[in-house]
Each structure stands twice: as structure tokens, then as C-alpha cells.
Length: 105
Length: 391
Image (cartoon, rainbow over all chains, first blue to last red; front, side, top):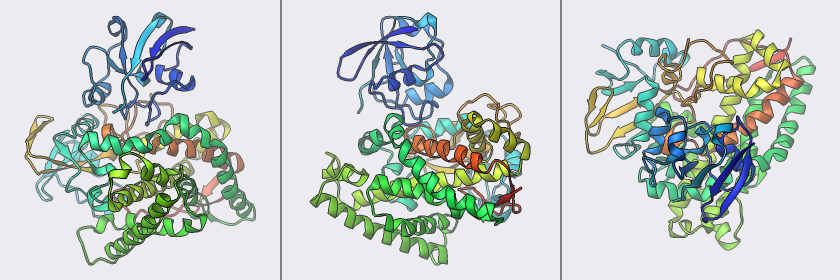
């Protein structure tokens, strides 16, 4: 299992367990932690926007061009910490991952 | 000089040779005859779809079809998102999955008589018998409108869709029929909106009428937003199902493989959508500033035709792109759009297809097509009819 600390849109922190190989978006969605994903996890809509916390941004694989195109148009885009949760596949190395779900607008 | 007549019968019948030819001229190509930019590149289509600040929907077919107040064509991101957010919760995966049982019932209800007719030796047009009505049933129920209205909703939607190739011909019968359809759908929705004002509901019409932003909208704006959603919610899914059944019918080995292994259905249907996209092209118009794209400058006001069907076969993104390959790496096609205007109903469409196709293939694992397909719609591609019979 991979333990994740996620801060929801109300500022409440949840500590949850995820399964390696499953995306962060699917993990949060299946645990009923409110996260939008209109396209269903295909990196097409940009609605599962999160911010990585505490230097986790540097520990993940880099963003694809598709992901960058979507992130750059988001109102709360942060060049250093913004990611799409559907594009983060949980692995053992991500145990302890900390993130925050971006605000809806 | 490269040019593409999007209204020609040859393009409607088979757009792919045209795309291959255009691609030889580059990723973005000026069509001198039609005075438009043609974009067959996946990367550049994504760039322009996500660049709503500089290239928008104003002055495109979509605006004519849906009306200016519909969020599907609004480029002001804040306003677009505020409107879309009213319904976004209902269309999220987490919400959509609760519809599973109901969609299963609808599929079974449509499938049983279809299978009966096939077993009686009849050749059945599965579009009429199965594909067309399923999404109408689903979206009508989500809208909270009477089941009696389904045939009219279908007719109005089909009339609107059929008019797209004729939008520059104001006197064409298709254009006139579409104007009637839009007006009839509008009248129907005005009444529905009025009824929700008096008696609030939690269906999709009730959600927008009762929302904070809905309370600031005119009846016209409420109507056009409901109309676009009702229309979009029933057209693409029907065509996707038809396209899937037809495509597998042309490839008996693929049909046998996927019938024997239903877990392969989602990837197969995504490949259907990539390989022979329902949405063949979209338009974007450059706003007030020039746009640099793919090494060229698009002048203010110029029209870009995003060739989604070509982008889905872009060799820069897909190996052997013209091959139908259900095992290829899933990279995300453009058939549901990209960015701000990505299809709100994509997850619902996928749910309906994920329920309908396994049930159909379990009941009818081997079928043969009644004949080749004919196509009559260049922008939204799928066979006019899919006649099948048991093999």
C-alpha cells in the first residue's frame, strides 16, 4: 500500500491508503474524497487539479505535453506544484505523498 | 495547393485519404480555396483547443448550432466554468456510477426485442432498434422530462444534426427543418424551466434553474444551456455505439476476440473512437491578436479547422496510426475534445457504452453486417444504418 496525505477543498486533511498501479485521481475518487474528473482520467479536461506539497513535485515523473497544455490554462496553476491527479500513478516510492486538491472556481 | 472540401461526398464517405494528403503538406496547412487553416496534427489541435484566450468559438458552426449563451461555446473561462460547474457534479465519474443499475435496465429493455428479432432470422438496423434510443432514455431521465417526449427529442436532435453541412444555405430544407427543431425544443424547454421555477426539482433542469448562477440567467440563457446539453447528451453516444458495432462487423476476427473477452471492450471502443472518430472536425476562430502556431502566424479573425479525425491518426503520436489495433498504448484521443470545452458527458457516454456493448456481444457474439456503410454527415461521422443478422 501507498499512504497519501491529501488536503481536501475544505482544508481537511485525510490520510488514506492507495494501491500501487492505480492513479491518484482514481484512488481519491474511490474513497469518495471530492475530486472532479469530467474526462474520467484520460488527461483531457484538466479538472482533477492538485498541488503537491513539501517537495514532492521534484520526486515525481515529469509532466507530459498534454498535461502541461491543460495545467497552464487553469486559474490556480502553479508552475512548481500543479499536477493532474489522473497523471500520477501510485508507486511504492510515492509512500507518504502529500497533496492538496485545488479549489473549484 | 492543398484544399479540403468538407461538404464533398468523397470526404463524407471516407475522409482518411484526404487527411493523409494534407499531412504531406505539414502540421498546419493554409487552404487557399476555402480560406481556412487545416490542422491535422494532434499536438497543434491540443495547442489551439487549450488556447481559448486567443482562439474561440465565436463565429463557428458550434455557436450557430447551440446559441451564444450556451456554455459549450463560451470562451470566457470564468463564466464558462461557473455555468458548467452547475452540472459538473452530475457528470462526474462518482455520480455517473450510481446510474449503472438504471442504464442496465434500459439496455436490457432495448436489447431483448432486438435479440428476439435477430433470432427470428430478421435483419435488424441496430441504430433504430438499440443505439439511438438508449442515450435519449438516459438523458431524458436525467433531465426529468416525460418519457413520452423521447421520440420528439430524438427527432429534434436529428434535425439539428442533419443541418450542420447546410448551415451556409439558409433556404435548404435541412436548415429550415433545423430552425423548426431548435424552436420546438426551445418552446418545450421554456415550459420545463417555468415548471421548475414553480416546483423545484433536483434533475438537470432543476439544478440549473435553482443554482446561484441560474437565478441570474434569462429564460433564453437557461433554455440554450439546457438545449445544448440535451442535444449533446443523446447524439454522440448513439453514434459511438453504432460505429463500434459496425467496425467490429467489418472485422470478424476482432469481433470474435472481443466477444470472447469482454474485458477488452473498453479498450476496443476507445480504439473505435480513435480510429474512426465521431467528431471529424471542429472549428476555432482566432480572436483579436495573431496566433503563432506550428511555425505560422494565424491572422486575427481567421478560421482554423481542427481535423480531429486526422489528429487521431497522427503518426507523430501513434505507431501505425491507420491500423485498427485494440492493444495499442492508450494515449488519449481527441474525439471528446480537450481542455475547457472537453465533452461534459464523456464519462456518461463511456458508462453507457461499457454497459451496452458487453450485453449486446453476450447476446449476439457473432453477427454479420447487411452491407457496407453509407455516411451522410461529414462533421459527425457514423454509418447511417447498421443492419445486422445472426451468422
